Length: 203
Length: 157
Image 1 (cartoon, each protein chain N blue to C red):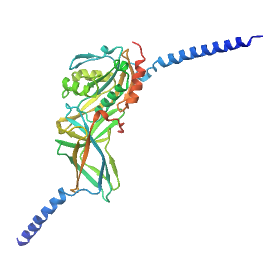
Image 2 (cartoon, helix red, strand yellow):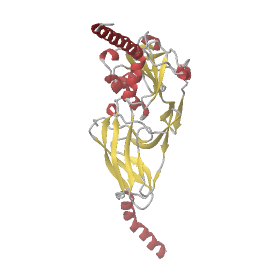
Image 3 (cartoon, rainbow over the protein chains, first blue to last red):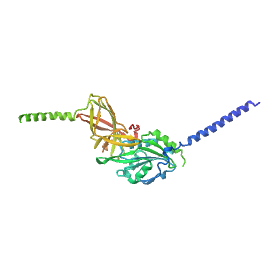
């Protein structure tokens, strides 16, 4: 016959064990990023372009999560909203998280977007957003690796042309892998969710 | 000859009236609401404006132009996103049927404003004039809003 106090001891030990194991499992599951979707594997990759403060390589940001968007400053509609939503998303992060996220606006309009203008444009939305661009040839190569494209659409007036472009936000994880693809109109909350998931990836 | 002069005189006589009708008649059957223009960083030469327009009259009206004393040029454009690809086209005119409500919104139809007055600040108003094919026009203010505060989801599909 087992004594009553011994039964209680075992019950207490069991509860503690379940709590520790369960808590550990919960922590482990939460610390794991969601796997990269099949259709994003092999897409994207490193590139080096110019910014007002010198060359910027995607590789420079290993250990950080980078949002990449192909746009241009004279894009009146989609681009500023995308930038505004990035800025709002970044502001929702903790300071520690903010130190580990960057935004890259890749201008597909190097003819009109000077590096200084790009810098002024991106920092207007958030200091963590960097504007980069390159030659049309360089840009075409990068864009095709991201399975995107762009096209210049002249409408009579050569100065006021518009660009047709693929409008996705690419989420690059700390290992430099494309982790997620967001619609450009994604709300700050959705961006924050994706950034936090990518931040779980260890370098 | 006499008849010709009379006809000419009649035509000339109607001219001022025609002018009044062509340029100064407020389109009463048109209601504009939720009008705003995005304020952009100074490096950007072009910005977007949005509003909702309702034709409460009994006839179809055709929007043929937009102007503002505070912008060099204003045009109506339509963005479309097909499989993630954003394109933009200028709309030369736009028919609005009786009772129809047209919504300009991010990702869809929008105004393009070039060379907006640099002295305007968020909270100020941009004066916009819609010109219709029947000679009527609609003048309304659109609030300048900081684009960084914009959070609406695009609906262009």
